[in-house]
Length: 341
Image 1 (tube, rainbow, N blue to C red):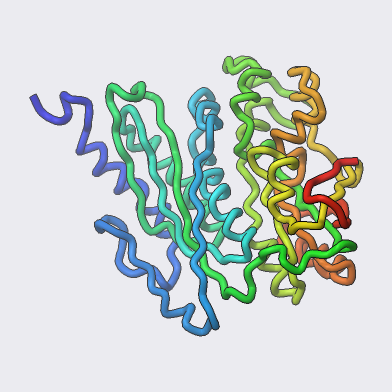
Image 2 (cartoon, rainbow, N blue to C red):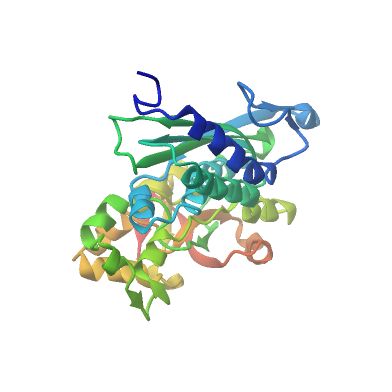
């Protein structure tokens, strides 16, 4: 008896590391010390000494059951973008710059090419966020997971000067809410999605004119990373008073998290286009509108609150970063909460 006969292929693990190195190298920042393969990832903090009061920010998350879709479609090179996005968007939402990311892949059997594809997506997400991929772990779980199954999660660390943190403390009635377009469902609500749509390959490979792609392609579209957009707003000299990353729980759970007591968010549903995938979900699943807004991002992946005088500069900065902004609503006095009208 040996480890391989028990279900863990050490040689496959070595090959996975070799295959992923080319992707990891693309994410390197000057602060990274050492290379891939050590017991820990090292990242110099010398560059943050110029900050008055540096604050470390962290975020950890996974891709939920969207991973199941990647397995069904046998497409694994974008799901890593989702894992990175879910972490770095939260950090950017607090005013931070993501510094580095580490991933964790649990699999039933280590297939080096598949693992390398997953890490390729993680690396692409890190490149989009400007973060370094400084380490990770691939763990085989024979007997716990089926041979062709895997799960993906990770965590990121970022930094900001405390005076630049986005806290919502200066939020006031009259401030304007600007939403940034999502790329679709992102990485939340897939347990419901998989109940609404058939997960058979034939159904997922069906092309829809309304989507402009197959159903599977629409569902697997990676989560948008908004780090560059928020940096662009900051560089434009605009103060983001509050920010909300629209993830699990949709508008009703996430928007109130950006508010302070005595303020409420009013969002106009007709102020931006809702991607057709959400219309399909609503109709095919007979899902009530309130539940749609309580589960999905409905077309806005990030919402910022700015002073009314800064709206034009904010919109220009978001467009300059390659994102699409919409004036989606405003802040009013009242009980903390969100009103969709």
